[in-house]
Length: 319
Length: 259
Image (cartoon, rainbow over all chains, first blue to last red):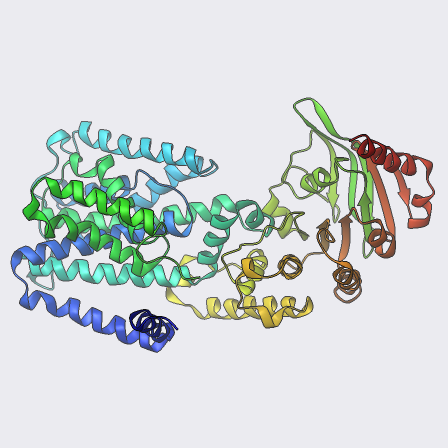
């Protein structure tokens, strides 16, 4: 017999095991997320929008790190490719924003293939170093090309309109990123429970055994890489039009690490975990803003504590 | 007809020859064994056959096609499945999920099928589950399909490995020391299972084994190797009385005595 509060937690966990109950919880949460803007002020709205934005990025990286078990230290590069594709096409060529999305998806996937193709044969530590280098290369290219606006970046990216409404207010972008985050959750969930999702798991658990079972190790990893890149690319598109300006300094190594942190902190490979991780990433520094520069120190200590006591993240994979 | 033909296979690591001009064949529908003292190079032969090692020279023909230097996953797809000497299960996944990995190379759904749940993806998932359950039923482990593989007793984990190998729908099954770590009763069940796989599923079997009793009981042809070289070949009776074989085995026992 456990103490009253632990038995309550187990009851709750058992109740959540049922598909239908889980759906109810998800629906309630989605409804809450939908109505929050009606009561939130601009500041809260901005923070929450940012949280949904990181949710998309973290879910994308989760496919690479959590599902396929590949350490990627340059994920911001894919996000940069998406943002710059949209930024350049809309501001320099005047192409409609919505038409730039497929182009951005294509470019980020291509970047995924270019970097993944030759490097995914490497074992994890080497791969991490190569991805780190790739991330920096993309940023430095963006800094030095004329078309990307050099170090000062691109400005004057037009806001898109959606059935005649110009997407310009905080609330518009809140809903855009919320919908994208829900879509990202849905796609992640479907992938996780599929032949491909299982193949990622096999490769993550034991590469040689997976190969012996007829799974093309490199091909399956490349798939993860390209799909992860696509998530980053789409998030980048919308990021560009929300900010209306992008600069290379948005896509630093620190940005890649931050996204990775969200994935690891929340629980690699678990969708709810990754969402919690992304929110923790964005909300913590905001909630403790009053502490001034001390807050990053405390954030660091809290992360250390979480990793020490819950090495599999806040919301680990069920056993 | 020979399902597997190996000619003059040579493998060396940093100048040390592990396999020396090895030639042998496995006939379609037989149960063949490869035996030899510790360190004779048996597992290295398996690793060459399944593409994990790249032999220096020689020929490996499977089903009349050369599979030399092909990638392991392509060899599995061509119909050769293996088990590992030290179990290599996906421990944090369920037994059923483990076995489902075998069907991967016989199916094709990708990311789009997964996201949109297309009818063909749906049918494929059903097929994967059905075949995997059949394979589990065949090895007598269906009732444990939802257990985590890492939590099963050792004997059951071995069965999961066989079911997983069977799920690749192989023509040739390579078993690397299948009796290692099994008790007497489990060994008897293993012998029955091996015969069962050959007789009912028509799968040709090649096994590496230390346990002489088991090898002598099930194999129709035995290849004996020592220091990477073939020293004898034939039926159990023929091999047992071969002076070279006796020497190889007694020699290794002498060395053990010295230690």
